[in-house]
Length: 384
Image (cartoon, rainbow, N blue to C red; front, top):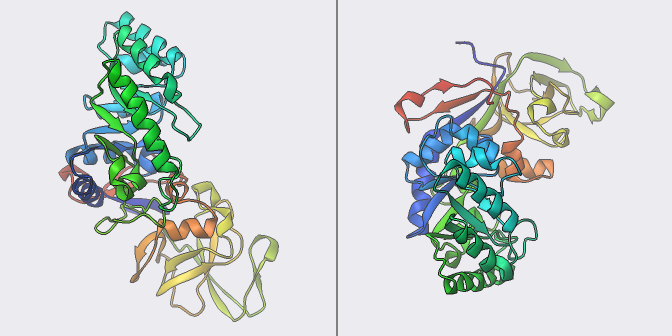
């Protein structure tokens, strides 16, 4: 089979090992595998199945629409939606057995009404805003919201919050948030609400703050082998699951002093071999990588020469023996070196999360490994 001009390889064995390693580290807490944003660009369906097979207790998505797509392949396992349903989404969420988040009386009433109409026993997770100031009930109002949910026949299966500074070990604000969360939980207990799951920790807090692990940890970045912050410890044994690869489609030889690319902003200091690679910002390669980003080609790392265009980049290969058809590693390992998501993010002035999620869904994902026998070597087309 002819390989596409561009592909993402996803190592399901790495995902499996990362889930198991995380489970060992977090002890008694159970693991939610967060597969929002199409599994952080890795492919939600395959990641979800692998994570569940490897010990994850449930899945997490951001929106009802993501949960509904996941139900095409994940039929019965718990899927928690980490934001309130939009008005009108409640019937679909309830009918498909999703577990919605509720943050206030309005969303509680809407979900309860849908559950009553459909005759479905429905669990919810109550979100409490302890300081991120984005979504969630005020801690002082959480008891009233939880009591209303119970009164209207919903099961308050989980109560949770979200840290603002979990990846900063020098910030005490996460401790402040956790204290606020525990006080709100005390209020709920006084009302007889005792959720199965209390959860506060995402990847960074799960690794760095044992006190925040509670009953459930929401694992996103570390599930994919990505460090959620440069100061986050305990990533020994985790492996990146994703690599992004292309191929050389043309070679040019240019003289010293020539300039390359749109705007002619890259000047050659010596006579150089230039390799043309069919990837650009339409595929998710940031324009900010022009003149500063690197790829792995030929014998090692080489710089992007000039602007990142919509569909192509040019690579300064010096005098390396590079040929048409040679593999180009944009993200991942090759030729004895590796470009990590963290390094890639630094070049583009971005984050590791944006690095992997911005890769276009039109780039085929190829699944490798032995986590599921039928996934070995399989190639998907565009991820929908």
